[in-house]
Image 1 (cartoon, rainbow, N blue to C red):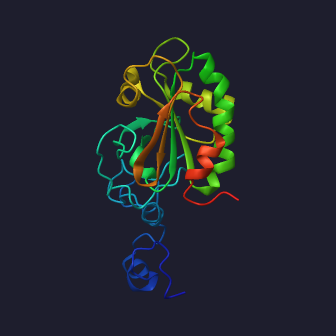
Image 2 (cartoon, rainbow, N blue to C red):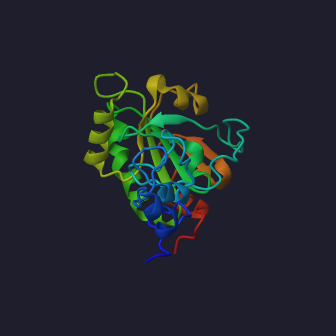
Image 3 (spheres, rainbow, N blue to C red):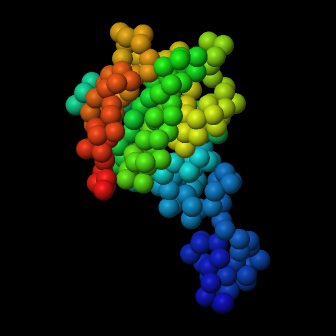
Length: 219
């Protein structure tokens, strides 16, 4: 087809690509393994190799660059962070600005965190299609060290989490929300627009709380 634009570069194959001998395959300007078309669809920067869609498939929202934090208390607009996930990608909170996000802070050696992990995974499977995303953030592995990518992936596989599992070295992001408590896990529920809805322990969030705050109504 002479009018085809195989690599989505706004030049037809016959007009420029074929005539000049350039590559008619999908264009990847920044060489990060994601085509320019895939990056445009994910609201990432096709000229920046460090900014690309998530390997885990976490959907990025268009408002990612328009959120301004006001604090870390209930009612505030949550601050952004960038923490490495089980695939080695930096996960940024504001990428999920149109979703209902549950930040699940804990450690891998924490018995309660282990006991609650299946519940968080169930919430993700049940409510994910309606705009919910859990982000499990862990400050230590079972050896009390910062979790490696392999540690995070092992947790993900053990609990079939289906959501980002990130390392929070020294619990620095955790401390932003809950600096005075050593009890874990800590749940921070953040609504669309990154409004902090609640901060509390593992009993502070129920399925009904999630259903009431979902951006897409749960049937």
